[in-house]
Length: 258
Image 1: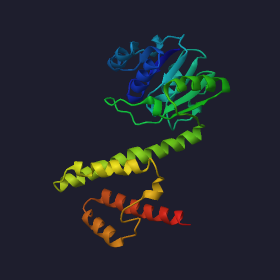
Image 2: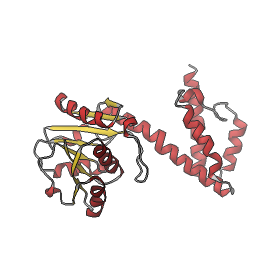
Image 3: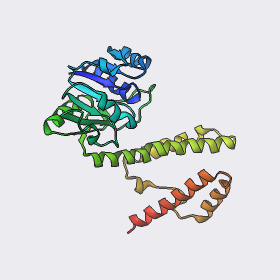
Protein backbone atom coordinates (compact mmCIF):
# COMPACT_ATOMS: atom_id res chain seq x y z
CA UNK A 1 0.00 0.00 0.00
CA UNK A 2 1.29 3.46 -0.92
CA UNK A 3 0.74 6.00 1.84
CA UNK A 4 1.06 9.78 2.09
CA UNK A 5 1.48 11.30 5.55
CA UNK A 6 0.44 14.88 6.11
CA UNK A 7 2.25 16.17 9.17
CA UNK A 8 5.69 15.78 10.71
CA UNK A 9 5.10 15.89 14.46
CA UNK A 10 5.29 13.09 16.99
CA UNK A 11 2.22 11.16 15.79
CA UNK A 12 3.25 11.43 12.13
CA UNK A 13 6.81 10.39 12.98
CA UNK A 14 5.87 7.31 14.99
CA UNK A 15 3.24 6.25 12.45
CA UNK A 16 5.70 6.67 9.62
CA UNK A 17 8.29 4.52 11.36
CA UNK A 18 5.70 1.88 12.27
CA UNK A 19 4.37 1.66 8.72
CA UNK A 20 7.90 1.35 7.35
CA UNK A 21 8.64 -1.49 9.78
CA UNK A 22 5.41 -3.17 8.68
CA UNK A 23 6.54 -3.11 5.07
CA UNK A 24 4.30 -0.30 3.87
CA UNK A 25 5.54 2.35 1.44
CA UNK A 26 5.38 5.97 2.60
CA UNK A 27 5.69 7.71 -0.73
CA UNK A 28 5.49 11.29 0.58
CA UNK A 29 5.61 13.33 3.76
CA UNK A 30 4.02 16.75 3.68
CA UNK A 31 4.58 19.59 6.12
CA UNK A 32 4.33 23.35 5.80
CA UNK A 33 7.90 23.37 7.10
CA UNK A 34 10.02 21.62 4.47
CA UNK A 35 12.86 20.99 6.95
CA UNK A 36 10.50 19.11 9.24
CA UNK A 37 9.13 17.14 6.31
CA UNK A 38 12.66 16.22 5.21
CA UNK A 39 13.65 15.14 8.70
CA UNK A 40 10.87 12.55 8.80
CA UNK A 41 11.08 11.61 5.13
CA UNK A 42 14.79 10.89 5.38
CA UNK A 43 14.22 8.39 8.20
CA UNK A 44 11.57 6.41 6.33
CA UNK A 45 12.86 6.61 2.77
CA UNK A 46 10.23 9.01 1.52
CA UNK A 47 9.92 12.24 -0.45
CA UNK A 48 9.39 15.51 1.41
CA UNK A 49 7.05 18.22 0.12
CA UNK A 50 5.81 21.51 1.56
CA UNK A 51 3.35 22.49 -1.17
CA UNK A 52 0.16 20.51 -0.76
CA UNK A 53 -0.48 20.81 -4.50
CA UNK A 54 2.63 18.69 -5.08
CA UNK A 55 1.11 15.62 -3.42
CA UNK A 56 0.78 12.46 -5.46
CA UNK A 57 -2.81 11.82 -6.42
CA UNK A 58 -2.37 8.08 -6.90
CA UNK A 59 -1.57 6.97 -3.34
CA UNK A 60 -3.85 4.44 -1.64
CA UNK A 61 -4.14 6.20 1.71
CA UNK A 62 -3.72 9.78 2.94
CA UNK A 63 -3.14 10.15 6.69
CA UNK A 64 -3.75 13.61 8.16
CA UNK A 65 -1.60 13.67 11.30
CA UNK A 66 -1.67 17.34 12.19
CA UNK A 67 -3.00 19.29 15.18
CA UNK A 68 -6.74 19.00 15.75
CA UNK A 69 -7.33 22.64 14.86
CA UNK A 70 -5.67 22.17 11.48
CA UNK A 71 -7.42 18.97 10.33
CA UNK A 72 -10.34 20.59 8.53
CA UNK A 73 -8.16 23.19 6.87
CA UNK A 74 -5.59 20.68 5.62
CA UNK A 75 -8.27 18.23 4.47
CA UNK A 76 -10.01 20.86 2.38
CA UNK A 77 -6.80 21.67 0.55
CA UNK A 78 -6.41 18.08 -0.67
CA UNK A 79 -7.02 17.51 -4.35
CA UNK A 80 -6.72 13.75 -4.61
CA UNK A 81 -10.22 12.79 -5.73
CA UNK A 82 -12.07 10.09 -3.84
CA UNK A 83 -9.03 8.45 -2.30
CA UNK A 84 -9.17 7.07 1.24
CA UNK A 85 -8.40 9.90 3.67
CA UNK A 86 -8.14 9.48 7.45
CA UNK A 87 -7.24 11.68 10.38
CA UNK A 88 -5.54 10.60 13.60
CA UNK A 89 -7.37 12.71 16.17
CA UNK A 90 -9.04 11.39 19.30
CA UNK A 91 -11.64 14.14 19.71
CA UNK A 92 -12.26 15.32 16.15
CA UNK A 93 -15.37 13.67 14.67
CA UNK A 94 -15.29 11.71 11.43
CA UNK A 95 -17.59 14.37 9.97
CA UNK A 96 -14.64 16.77 9.89
CA UNK A 97 -13.72 15.07 6.60
CA UNK A 98 -17.18 15.40 5.05
CA UNK A 99 -17.03 16.68 1.51
CA UNK A 100 -13.33 15.96 1.13
CA UNK A 101 -13.71 12.46 -0.31
CA UNK A 102 -16.27 9.70 -0.62
CA UNK A 103 -13.90 7.51 1.39
CA UNK A 104 -12.97 8.84 4.83
CA UNK A 105 -12.08 7.45 8.23
CA UNK A 106 -10.21 7.76 11.50
CA UNK A 107 -6.99 6.05 12.57
CA UNK A 108 -6.37 7.05 16.19
CA UNK A 109 -3.40 5.47 18.00
CA UNK A 110 -3.91 5.87 21.74
CA UNK A 111 -0.47 6.58 23.14
CA UNK A 112 1.68 9.44 24.38
CA UNK A 113 4.38 9.95 21.77
CA UNK A 114 7.76 11.60 22.26
CA UNK A 115 10.19 12.12 19.41
CA UNK A 116 13.14 10.54 21.22
CA UNK A 117 11.42 7.48 22.71
CA UNK A 118 10.53 4.36 20.75
CA UNK A 119 7.21 2.60 21.39
CA UNK A 120 5.95 -0.91 20.74
CA UNK A 121 3.14 -0.30 18.26
CA UNK A 122 1.94 -3.89 18.59
CA UNK A 123 0.65 -3.00 22.07
CA UNK A 124 -0.87 0.37 21.20
CA UNK A 125 -4.69 0.46 20.92
CA UNK A 126 -5.79 1.88 17.58
CA UNK A 127 -9.35 3.22 17.38
CA UNK A 128 -10.76 3.13 13.86
CA UNK A 129 -13.87 4.47 12.18
CA UNK A 130 -15.02 4.95 8.57
CA UNK A 131 -17.95 6.28 6.61
CA UNK A 132 -18.60 2.94 4.86
CA UNK A 133 -18.20 -0.72 5.88
CA UNK A 134 -15.87 -1.24 2.93
CA UNK A 135 -13.57 1.58 4.01
CA UNK A 136 -13.65 0.32 7.60
CA UNK A 137 -12.46 -3.08 6.39
CA UNK A 138 -9.56 -1.46 4.56
CA UNK A 139 -8.58 0.65 7.57
CA UNK A 140 -8.79 -2.39 9.84
CA UNK A 141 -6.50 -4.38 7.55
CA UNK A 142 -3.97 -1.54 7.75
CA UNK A 143 -4.29 -1.17 11.52
CA UNK A 144 -3.90 -4.91 12.02
CA UNK A 145 -0.47 -4.70 10.43
CA UNK A 146 0.65 -2.35 13.20
CA UNK A 147 -1.21 -3.37 16.33
CA UNK A 148 -2.75 -6.35 18.09
CA UNK A 149 -5.31 -4.05 19.73
CA UNK A 150 -7.52 -2.57 17.02
CA UNK A 151 -10.94 -1.35 18.14
CA UNK A 152 -13.87 -0.01 16.12
CA UNK A 153 -15.26 3.06 17.91
CA UNK A 154 -17.68 5.76 16.84
CA UNK A 155 -16.76 9.43 17.22
CA UNK A 156 -18.51 9.78 20.58
CA UNK A 157 -16.77 6.74 22.04
CA UNK A 158 -13.42 7.88 20.69
CA UNK A 159 -13.87 11.32 22.27
CA UNK A 160 -14.63 9.69 25.64
CA UNK A 161 -11.48 7.61 25.22
CA UNK A 162 -9.48 10.77 24.50
CA UNK A 163 -10.85 12.56 27.56
CA UNK A 164 -9.99 9.54 29.70
CA UNK A 165 -6.49 9.56 28.21
CA UNK A 166 -6.03 13.24 29.09
CA UNK A 167 -7.09 12.56 32.67
CA UNK A 168 -4.90 9.48 33.02
CA UNK A 169 -1.83 10.70 31.15
CA UNK A 170 -1.58 14.46 30.65
CA UNK A 171 -3.06 15.46 33.99
CA UNK A 172 -1.08 12.82 35.84
CA UNK A 173 2.15 14.02 34.26
CA UNK A 174 1.28 17.57 35.29
CA UNK A 175 0.89 16.34 38.87
CA UNK A 176 4.37 14.83 38.57
CA UNK A 177 5.67 18.25 37.50
CA UNK A 178 3.96 19.96 40.44
CA UNK A 179 5.39 17.32 42.78
CA UNK A 180 8.86 17.97 41.41
CA UNK A 181 8.50 21.71 42.02
CA UNK A 182 7.38 21.11 45.61
CA UNK A 183 10.25 18.74 46.29
CA UNK A 184 12.88 21.01 44.78
CA UNK A 185 11.53 23.97 46.76
CA UNK A 186 12.29 21.93 49.88
CA UNK A 187 15.72 20.76 48.70
CA UNK A 188 14.50 17.27 47.86
CA UNK A 189 15.16 15.18 44.76
CA UNK A 190 12.36 13.96 42.50
CA UNK A 191 14.11 10.58 42.41
CA UNK A 192 12.76 9.99 45.92
CA UNK A 193 9.24 9.43 44.56
CA UNK A 194 10.07 7.62 41.32
CA UNK A 195 9.66 4.17 42.99
CA UNK A 196 6.28 5.28 44.35
CA UNK A 197 5.16 6.40 40.89
CA UNK A 198 6.32 3.11 39.36
CA UNK A 199 4.52 1.02 41.99
CA UNK A 200 1.32 3.04 41.61
CA UNK A 201 1.33 2.49 37.85
CA UNK A 202 2.18 -1.19 38.23
CA UNK A 203 -0.71 -1.88 40.60
CA UNK A 204 -3.36 -0.92 38.06
CA UNK A 205 -2.05 -3.53 35.64
CA UNK A 206 -3.69 -6.14 37.87
CA UNK A 207 -6.37 -4.17 39.71
CA UNK A 208 -9.07 -1.58 39.13
CA UNK A 209 -7.83 1.88 40.16
CA UNK A 210 -10.65 2.36 42.67
CA UNK A 211 -9.65 -0.83 44.46
CA UNK A 212 -6.07 0.28 45.11
CA UNK A 213 -6.62 3.91 46.07
CA UNK A 214 -4.50 4.93 49.07
CA UNK A 215 -3.74 8.16 50.89
CA UNK A 216 -5.34 10.49 53.42
CA UNK A 217 -8.43 11.26 51.32
CA UNK A 218 -9.54 7.63 50.98
CA UNK A 219 -9.07 7.30 54.77
CA UNK A 220 -10.91 10.60 55.23
CA UNK A 221 -8.03 11.78 57.39
CA UNK A 222 -9.09 15.40 57.71
CA UNK A 223 -6.22 16.33 60.02
CA UNK A 224 -3.55 15.33 57.49
CA UNK A 225 -5.45 16.95 54.62
CA UNK A 226 -5.76 20.19 56.60
CA UNK A 227 -2.03 20.20 57.41
CA UNK A 228 -1.13 19.58 53.76
CA UNK A 229 -3.38 22.42 52.64
CA UNK A 230 -1.77 24.68 55.21
CA UNK A 231 1.62 23.91 53.65
CA UNK A 232 0.25 24.81 50.21
CA UNK A 233 -1.49 28.04 51.21
CA UNK A 234 1.05 30.18 49.32
CA UNK A 235 0.51 28.17 46.14
CA UNK A 236 -3.16 28.78 45.31
CA UNK A 237 -3.22 26.66 42.13
CA UNK A 238 -1.71 23.62 43.83
CA UNK A 239 -3.86 24.23 46.93
CA UNK A 240 -7.02 24.12 44.81
CA UNK A 241 -5.92 21.00 42.93
CA UNK A 242 -5.09 19.18 46.18
CA UNK A 243 -8.39 20.21 47.78
CA UNK A 244 -10.56 19.31 44.79
CA UNK A 245 -8.84 15.99 44.09
CA UNK A 246 -9.08 15.02 47.76
CA UNK A 247 -12.81 15.72 47.72
CA UNK A 248 -13.17 13.86 44.41
CA UNK A 249 -11.52 10.79 45.98
CA UNK A 250 -13.94 10.98 48.89
CA UNK A 251 -16.93 11.37 46.56
CA UNK A 252 -15.90 8.46 44.33
CA UNK A 253 -15.38 6.24 47.36
CA UNK A 254 -18.86 7.08 48.59
CA UNK A 255 -20.38 6.26 45.21
CA UNK A 256 -18.51 2.97 45.11
CA UNK A 257 -19.84 2.05 48.54
CA UNK A 258 -23.39 2.64 47.33
